[in-house]
Amino acid sequence: MNLSTFLLTGAWLLLGLLSPSEAQERSAPDTTAQKTGATGAGPRATQFPVNDAEYKIGPQDVLRIDVWKEDQLTRTVPVRPDGKVTLPLLNDVQAAGLTPMELAGVISKGLKKYINSPQVTVTIAEINSQRIYVTGEVARAGAFPLLPNMTVLQALSGSGRFTQFAKTKKIYVLRVEDGKQMKLPFNYNEVVDGKKLEQNVLLRPGDVIVVP
Image (cartoon, rainbow, N blue to C red; front, side):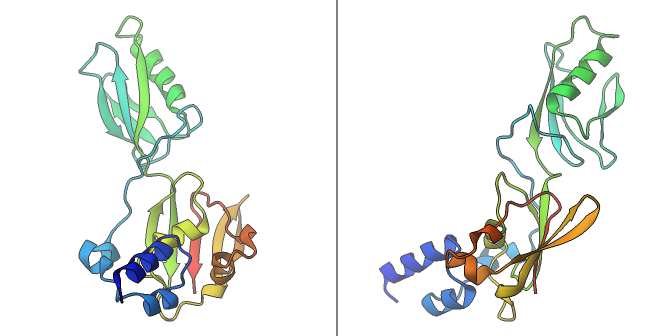
């Protein structure tokens, strides 16, 4: 294979426009997973700009809490599975379900017993509570960070190649809505061909993509 063909094939693969079988035909065997250890990689923290005015803090998120002119109270803390954070003077404070601004208000109110006019700022250091899952006939199944406006196709591109047994026409998304489980069909072949693009839905926290 000449260099130009190799580069072109890599570009199409990154865009998710080639099926695994097509990619294998056009390029050399992929050793990326072996080099990076991607096959055994666990979920990684999401770090991207978020709208703090709207974002609801969740368990396992990491928060940066700044108290102006109070270095001993300023720190980075994880949100525990029970949704609380532990802070000096205040002990356990409920964080999950609040926006950073709302949490700053709660902390500021609590600190007024000890500090005159405390000024508190809360920012998101890491987002770990927003995840989706990919399972089935893919090279790298598991939990993945839910990025803003992430679609099914984008999530699949992050899970590596399909295996040779994957039924790419019968992929589906499992979603819980109003306490009921929904099954959203996703035909990979149609979507990459530009057909029935409404199948390529925006993912929500907790969605599970199944590749049978």
